[in-house]
Length: 325
Image: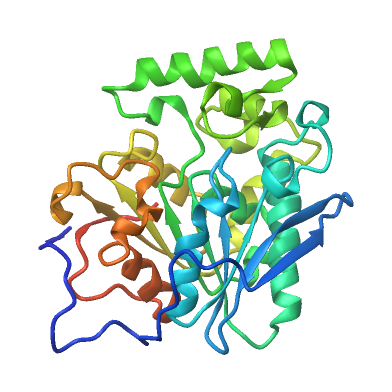
């Protein structure tokens, strides 16, 4: 294990493949709509680059794809074509009332992530296919059959909400909020009214069910018509170079949670990087702030370097955890 100093680009070592920058708030160059296997539309946008890899960003639970727009625009400026999408029932992919949806985490991976990854592979068959996964997105992407085509993956705060892996100092409150209160409210409304409560977005009841009942093994905790052995094997088909970034003040993605997730990606070349806020001279980063523009000069280049070249910069902050899964 090693710990590096505060990450800075050395004056004599420029970031890999620097590209002209576009404004971080730029809207997508193109709107997309692809059909999942069940026929419903998955929508959001594309930021184009003339060459380089094609990167699909997989969102966290109850987070609209627009949350990642500034990061996507910046990453496109580094030389990648970037796609974002909303899961079924979220944001622009909500085609029916959320209370009428049964969609769960398995659907978001097996159907939604698959639809977008397959679309990207067909549209750009000669370019490297990569992925970014935030929170459950880092797990859901591995449920897609097309994930076997991925060359490089970056996950941020990725885990699948097994409560015993939560930060022990906050575990009790998180258990009450996400595993007791959230399903109780969902039974009352038929979905979780997160937008009304100020807890991100409304969430289909199938996702709430999966989250609230999650145990140490994902495939035996979810309700699905797929066999547990099939679900467990899907991640193992991924042969990508995978960088899992965890923040030490993230109460969801503790080191144990990150290692548990990486155990599923048994066929990947895995690197687990743990970064403390103090290494960037900031008080906190947590579960969401990685994608805020204030980290465009410190954290975002880590993801770009990995997606573009499959390696970390020499002076990357943090500690590498061995073994990685």
